[in-house]
Image (cartoon, rainbow, N blue to C red; front, side):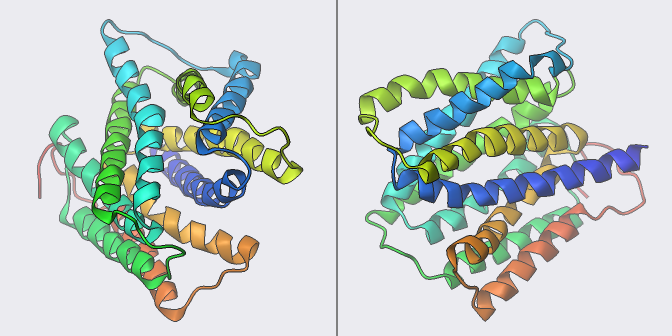
Length: 301
């Protein structure tokens, strides 16, 4: 049963990465018609509405004294600071360079989980992460950028801050998942994001008078499918697997993004990108491989 639960968690994480990969296509369509902060607010508001309608299935909540600090930190890391830093990053650096920084997330989570959660890091896990990292960097460099980076050093610094926020989110999520259901933790992200981004969106730019069906559909997809589905599946996967192991799946996001771009935007993969994508998949698979022997928690072998 334990092994079956782990397999279900792996499937949930892969689906979550596919949904997050598709979100870049939806964001591209939404940003063409709406200011970025209005798009973020819209997706959070729609996600909150779905959670309110489904509140009867919220699952467990066992509050422990002091949990408010961890819950507040979780919401501050993501969606609040994460989306702000990511938006700033993409204004100054190219998508290719941002992708290189994003590929550092599994390594950051693995190190953080070893320090704060006492999860062990095996040589095989590290080798898989490094292999996937090389593949993700190669994947980014092999593609041609649409526009030049105006200030790549500043933009990459913002992207690194976004990844540090994502690291904090994953570690706090793992700490809280034993007492709170994935539903509740995901709903909190949507609720806090709605309240946080509404005044920012209102002050940033006026809402367009008319929005096409394509634009509304993109925001609806981001709010209902990505915010509810991807975050819910990711939170479930993290609750069933070590944080360092679950984070390794994030290297699949750029691969899925390219696959969706091929199908929906008529983009193509060159041979180098195909090899890089295969390397990412190989690295993720290697990071999930476990030897049969048992190693005490906290031991770096």
